[in-house]
Amino acid sequence: MKKLYYENPYIKTFETELVYQAADDKERVYAVLKETAFYPTGGGQPHDEGTLNGIKVVDVEEAEGEIRHYLERELEPSNSGISGKIDWNRRFDHMQQHAGQHILSAAFEELYGYKTVSFHLGKEILTIDLEISELPVRHAEEAERLANAIILENHPIEARWVSAEEASQFPLRKQLSVSEDIRLVIIPEFDYNGCGGTHPTSTGQVASVKILDWERQKKKIRVQFICGSRILTQLQTKHEITGNLSQLLNAPEQDLPSAASRLIENGKDLEKQLEAAKEALLAYEAKEMFTAGKEKCISKVFEGRSIQELQKLARLIASQSENADVILVNETTDKLQFVCARGADSESDMKSLSAELLQKINGKGGGNPQFAQGGGDRLMSGEDLLQYALRLAEQK
Image (cartoon, rainbow, N blue to C red; front, side):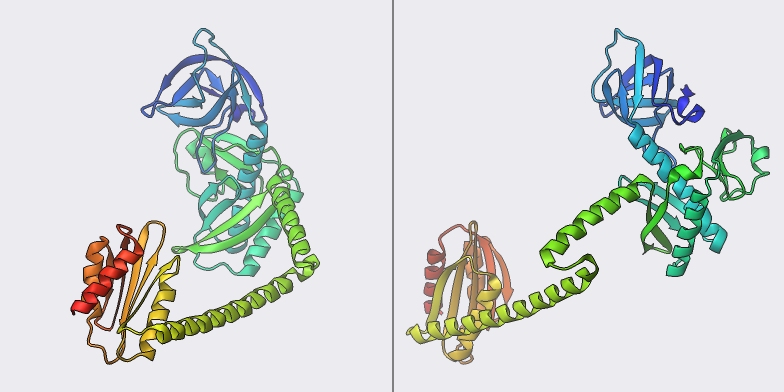
């Protein structure tokens, strides 16, 4: 199969013939052509997209010595003539990103000897893994500076097919993974690299490189970056975000960090105040329930309370009455929860009581003789569960 994307990566449309179409083991329809300008996934670069006779190409893979164009639906079998159209924006973006990766990787290696051991071209960002355990900020800045200088100088980018013997004459950045059909991508006097991807014909077309961040991945450093038009896209996105934040925080862009810090601190203060208010309300609620409780067991059914609130409430009530037992039940849409506690002088076994309640609601829980809790399915009303608990408590 003739690979037009190697002959000219700037081809946007082409005419060819259908060899055959079939379906793979996942029942995905694909077409094999006499020649193609669609680049298949490989070497860290994603596949091209576009159309064949107006039908969308959703994936392109090289398998069993052929390039398979996966389609949204079958081509008309009566028409062997194929008109292909490449999604040029996607293709040129990949060309910019891939060439930018070559330049940045070469910059890291030339300045500091940092070798790139893997590369991934994602939909929004690119990553390279450097064979180092730490990346100083200054080294990242200097590598980015050199990469952009090479781009600005507009060096040619050459793609050349060579033999293994010819390849050995070049100062290759990494060892070749093949011994035949060797394709070198060359930026003269800067980078020599075996690569099967698509690239522009000059570094100036990459436009620029920007490192976004890096992190440690096992024993390597993963660098995140973008090139070319993606920088403008991210700049526009960030500009819109900072503009919205400026309005929301009523602060100019340069003051956004301090305005956000103040907002966070105020939020923390409000959370503390709210938590204190909740604690005070729980204490008041516990006192009211203790005062109102005439029986040995103080109990109540709630709706939609958190289990944490019930725990605090039960402990507060039990701490005010040394002889009383406390049973609190909470109803949600499809669950029942309960908390059992006893005062210091009570001899009731809350763990035993909890175990019997859990059997009634197919639940799970835990605790000890002083305090227990659990929850399960709403197989009865909260009031029915409470009444059952009170009868058990009276028997013990």
